[in-house]
Image (cartoon, rainbow, N blue to C red; front, side, top):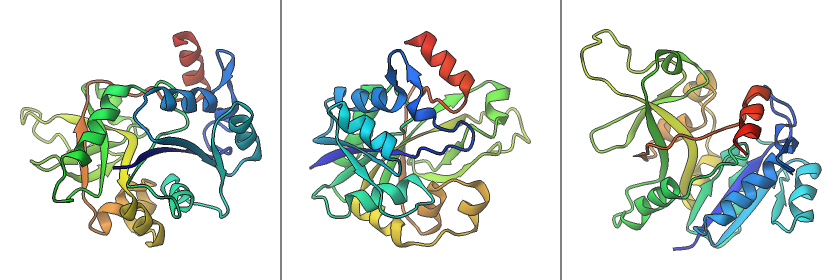
Length: 241
């Protein structure tokens, strides 16, 4: 099974423009993310796919592999699908460009989903971890996910799901970590499908997969991600470095 990692890297970010080119301990955020993905040793190859010549040159100049997007894209999945359409791969892992502190263990667990999926019932897999703080649960920047009894995603939302009408029901709130592993065909199918109302409303691309019947296996981890969405996040990351 041939597995690669692709890091979608858009220069223009709504909340924090040019964040991927910010300095993080002597290297840019995107360079640290790329190197962290390589260092996991889980992938046959690692690519950055970008719409920015600045990001492209940053990766190439530092000895990495990058692909320039040809078309404009609404989502990271679209950008990745274009990049891998003609590559000979089985599983594609989407690593977020603004998450330079990649942890190998949950990624390995994600890939094990496909190694154990002998009947090929899983179209894509992703990560989640439990959150308990009320402010974290109510924060719309934290995407929540609910699953069925077999760990397949039922819905993702920026809202509080499920709604705690009965606070003694024993509900666990799971935060979605935006790292995905796709079967290549599921990714190409996504590329050709239109955005529908749920995805448009929540601005969550994973809802397109659910709206068109794709099965997303969620893997629980106890290791949350550290993303850089704001200048404040960048300062925290610099302290961690």
